[in-house]
Image 1 (cartoon, rainbow, N blue to C red):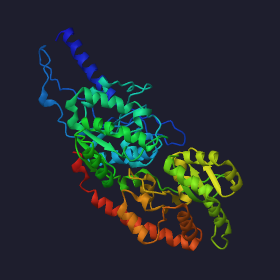
Image 2 (image 1 turned 180 degrees about the vertical axis):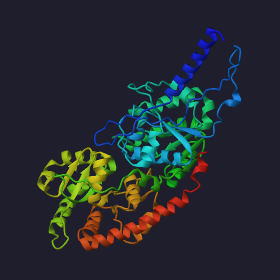
Image 3 (image 1 turned 120 degrees about the vertical axis):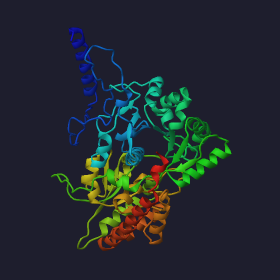
Image 4 (image 1 turned 90 degrees about the vertical axis):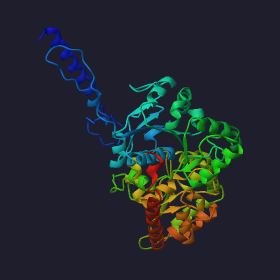
Length: 483
């Protein structure tokens, strides 16, 4: 055997070793309050190379295609700006959606706005999804970043299924959607792999501080462009599917008709830990009426009426008036951007009612660990207000409360997408009317007195458990829509 042949064999071996080692990826999670993920998390797709059998004498290398492993699993690319590390409603929806895909035996990768090195989710199902996924991003800052449309197009060809989240706000505030659309328009052959996923109807609900007419002027063109690159279309609820198909018909927009892909209560439950409460010296037990929310139009309208109409002060006075065994003063806890809106829009009222030691409490930002271990275990009920029906999307807070069995103070309008469940709660007298005064009545009559509150909680939880079981049965054939 010649030295030249030995050198060629060594080169082949080193090349194979290099490719195999490159198949190992590490998930760097350095965010505060997070448990480290064990190093050495392997990519789910091993490097694919032919088996080479050396002849006794030097001979040209021939690839034996029969030795290649057969592809048995399908893979999906989920495209959205926020991706898996967002705890806004859109992030919860995408995580639950991606877990549905994983349960349908699809490998799931993401294309997002930026690298996602710090992930706040901590449950085993959530981390199982994230650890087995690769994130590509259109922004700069990581090894898989800076993807232009041409590179995204090449990336898409690796996947059996492509799920495009068509969120209207991304057209102004992010680049992921535009980059993905350009990639799909460059190569129409990809259309057969694409499913459009809408969690809002841009014709019925606007974003940021735009009025509805702003979005209605743009909705038909957006929808036309999104459907032009898609072979299937999904919405978050049957009501949205109906409304979107009506819009398609009235505007004569071609493309697939919308079907419903509901947000899975079972998956939402799997995203949240219900672990024992973690206490600190500064963290005394409290009883909270908790509102975790952004400051979008519906929430602003409710809290404005709550404050200016004297309803918030009435709630505070009610909680102070209760005495007796087991009685405990309840605090109204505003968390998220809505806390900033209340505190800085109504400084005089907030100052009068007290912001910490009295009835009100505020927190602008919160980790999932803090929410799960310090807030939710001490929450007597989630406050999820609706003063009118919004004919678009769903309320993720309602889905979270039902999935986890946490009592909720809301109205029928808050149960869009879970109408049957909401109707059962409403018939039992467990929901508010669509007025601020109606919410105060529920708080006064169902939550303030400990004995009444216990019965209210038990009745809601019994109905919620039945809702989770019923939806699971309704969604048993979901995978037929994906694979």
